[in-house]
Image 1 (cartoon, one colour):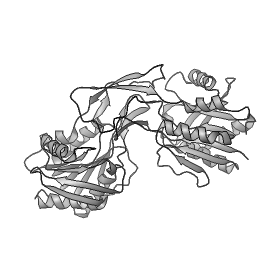
Image 2: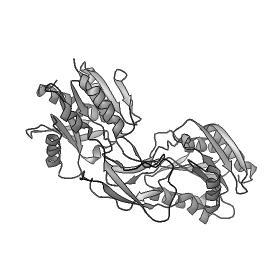
Image 3: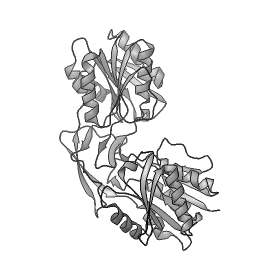
Image 4: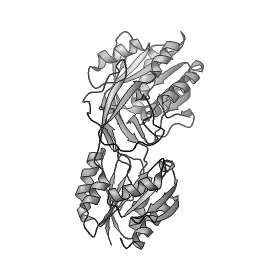
Length: 208
Length: 208
């Protein structure tokens, strides 16, 4: 069967040795996708940020902390994979500078510059061969379908899974699986159920 | 015996509904202190940020997310307590504004203002009665003892536990327990062992 790259969990971007930017991604969607892939006979390379979730033992797990580390691990693993599913929520901004020592409290506000990190799934979409495919996730608080479809096209993805912010760290999720033609399939249920529907969609599109 | 307030874990300060500032505090020191207090016959009120650690069932646990929520819960619980041990690592800065919708990626850097949050242990130190006591923790990457002692005095604490950044999310810790006279007791071991040494110090100082 196929080898599939799955990204999972959040990343962390450090302001100093202690403080960081992150988000509440639990890694449970990535874990559900990995289990589903393995149950369907595929090999899994799982690139994961810091999470407390249990991943299937059969997956090859690469642990990373920052978005740059996640991007490097993905670019390294992707050429040997049939496709990639980006379930991670990597930080898309990082502090321009990381202080080498813990900042002391100062009087008055601290001004901070945040700069963009690598867009991992866009990078994979740009490098994929004719035979490879990519699936992105989009989390939107408003104007979801329009934004998701715009992301799918800009990032050269084969499918995008749109979910709303209640998906973060939740056990049941409400998503829509969207294809490049703008066709929308609602997918709601536990993360295991939604993972299964995503693999069904990949099969229906003859990607797997 | 006594009722003791213990704070534990990190807090989160949101930039928007998804992205937040935080740190890697695991809550294991807070959990070790709660277990030690209960083993010595005390009641425990545990105010905890988001963590995956197991807390003792006998503790009354108040779950919070932001530093403002942790401060409010502590100010509420403290008057009925003999003392407080601040093992949490609450964010001491928060974004000046929290966006109500998820920020979209913009071209170019984002500028951010961070403003100070409430210093919880300093606030408790300011409000404590003659009979109450407070213990702070300090995490310093450089010039530790001088900075810790300055914090102890400024925050009107009875003891301060200084640990270095390797303490974050580590199972063994190297700390120094410092009193207002500048006396230093090295305390190294598992978090359970260090928790026990902190309670020994409280007893030796006739605080408990």
